[in-house]
Length: 113
Length: 115
Image (cartoon, rainbow over the protein chains, first blue to last red):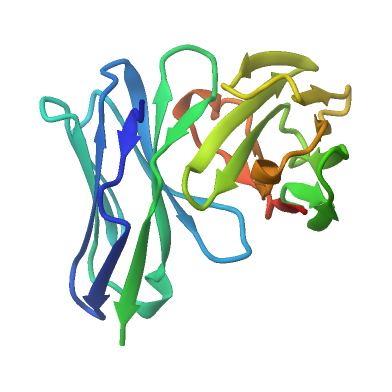
């Protein structure tokens, strides 16, 4: 049973426009939600996170929105740049001391010049 | 500051063999976790170690094992390899105080191919 779902395997946007990546989860006990970015032949790198007690977190061009009632979060990238082309993973962390993350299967973002 | 270092980067094994993968976390990081990435399944949690103790284990068969040493370096072992074990194995460490936020620093991974 997949607790974190990214239903769009791929997304293509034009440079300068907004990219919106979506993620749904089923477990209400997650206390942190994160986005990681992965380029080919590299490990994932942390992008941005949000605590379950917040509904928005912003860092430069990246904003994550959390809708707890819908168990949905989204990552907005504005404006999108060609260098943002990568696979984006949504992840969730449960409460307690464990660092175990539950990942979605990823969305491949392509930003076209 | 050096990042998370994983060795070897690439390896090819045959079914039935065993493999050991190594991970050196960022200096000062005491927590290490391992993930398996396959095209169809995304990243799946394998284990988590802190101060040489396994703190959590994912839903993998007993052929998958790991350990952590006193210097925080970690190894994972897969015995009796199967074709389905072909994957990218990722190691991650976390900074003291960052553990509860889920922010992990990943290595580049060890790409295992089982023939």
